[in-house]
Length: 157
Image (cartoon, rainbow, N blue to C red; front, side, top):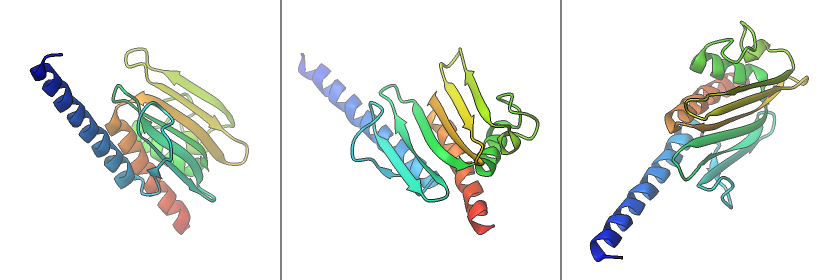
C-alpha cells in the first residue's frame, strides 16, 4: 500500500476510534450506571450495567456506527415514561397509555428504511425486557437520558 494511502487509513481509523469514544461518553453521561464491559459483545465497544430493582443490560456500538441497547427487567413505569417522551404513546401498538400501561406480551417493530429493530417484552411482574437495535447514537442517548430520569423518579418514590 502506498504511504499516502496508509496515512489516510491511519487518520480515518484514529477518527473512528475518537467517534466511538465520544459515543461511549454520551451514553454514560445520559445513563451513569453504564461501565465498560470486560469484553466486546456486539462487534464494537460495549457498556454494561446492573442495579438491583432497576434491571441490567448493555449498550454497544457496531462497526457501522449504529447503537444497540438491550435491557432486562426494567420497571415498566420507567420504560413507559422514557418511550412516551421519546416517541409518544402507542408507537408500537402498546396502547394509548404507552408501555407504562401495556398488557403483558411481546411488541415488535422493524423499520424497513433504516433496518432498526425494536422489541419489548412486557412481563407480568411489572418489568420490561427490551432491545432497540441498529439505531442512531443520538436516539439511544435520548432514550438513555429519559430512562435515567424516570428511574431517578422511581427511586425517589
